[in-house]
Amino acid sequence: MTRTALCVLALCLLAACKREPAESVPPSPPAAATRAPAAQGTAMSTPAAATTNLALPDKDAVLSEGYIRTIGQMAYVWGWPMVNQINRRAAITQAPHPGLLDGVLPAAPRGQVGMLHDYIDPAETFVTCPNQDVVYGLGFFSLDEKPVVIQVPDFGDRFWVYALYDARTNQFGEVGQPYGSKPGFYLLVGPNWKGEVPEGITAVARSATELANAIPRIFQDDTDEDRKAIQPLINQVVAYPLSQFDGKMKTIDWATAPIIPKPGPKSDGETKWVIPEKFFDKSQFGKVLEIVPPLPGEEALYAQFQALMAAADKDPLIRQQLDKVAQQTEDEVIKSFFQWKHNGKPAGNNWNRSVNNAQSGLDYFNRTGTSKSNMFDNRPNETQYFYTDVDGDGKQLSGSANYSVTFAAGQEPPVNGFWSLTLYNDKHLFHPNELKRYSLGTKNKNLKRNEDGSLTLYVGAKSPGEEKQNNWLPAPDGDFSLYIRAYWGKPEVTGGSWQPPAVKRI
Image: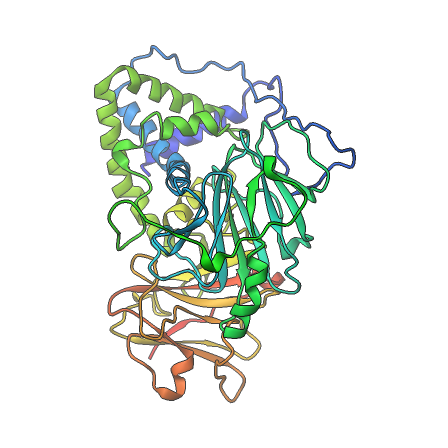
């Protein structure tokens, strides 16, 4: 982002902070799923949106070229994750029924979820940095129009979490093992929904936006026995509109879910969800300003953005200029977020760690960075992420070399859930290999430890030898990156005192 754009952002936020007292408080949906009200039928209400008495840009003002360029660039960086979300919902909800899009990705109509029955296929390109530690689900909703009930079976001691995201890619609700959530029926509603909560609902989670999506994650170890054991559980991970709720647990045999043909050509990288020349369409960025209410302090930004959109609507030349700005910002700003050094903050030994993931607030840097490089991560207390493109000496990881990652005895990621080390190619997707192995960690029961109790994992395009084969992550010939997940981390992980070991070139 240019220095000018940063200055404009600072001035906008400063103006917002100094605004006169608002006549009412903006909506503040609860972060956690709340217990259903004891008195059934109690309607929920949302406070009115904030207002301000400060002057706003006049819709008839003639904007200069430099001002258009500056505000346009800020709009692109700020709005990129939300345009991304809008387009994902539009695409995935075209599914006529729950199933597997192109045979690899769970998909469903709006108001439902699709589920995998095993690890995600390495051919998927819906999202970067998937993992092969959990069985995934996916669904998109319009929660003001159609509240959704999502079922939670009894997972016992198995790690699980239902990540619920709003249009900003922030999580809402607290549904999962880290929160002690009980089996039952969880009602997901939008910010303006005022209906009655029926008897039998376990808890209610309110999204800050009508656009929302759910990505259930249920841990599965890498054995045939666990693949079999998990099936009856995941078959109860079902979501449906509130109008279909009858208090009875519904089931779907996800192992026989139908394949849904995917329209359009296949991609060797992540599907391109944000198209620069369409970004400033009314159905894209314009839709964001319509369905995503400002956070406290964002009113000034919204005013500038709305004035910009009004000017572009009246003058085709301004719109042409904005399209050029969008492409330039994509090339000069957004693409750099794909490098891990621009995601999160340093974690030691040339690794970075996630910050503010899935709870970004006004941290636009990390929100946009995460949306570009590894969208749909979990909250820090649910999962801490560590990632690197380089070895311990700061050199790019490459298949032309071999590497080792050694966790000293007792120094594997300290977690209540599980941990893993995953390898991604230069597009942040899986590297196809004969072993069909993309990650190593808690799920693997055949890892070999060193005599002193330490654990060494080997990374490279060439096998480290038969004796070390179980501890080997195959790499592509070209550049790649490494990614550690620590699910439900202990204080050493969440507090930052635990550091990943250096990646050593052999």
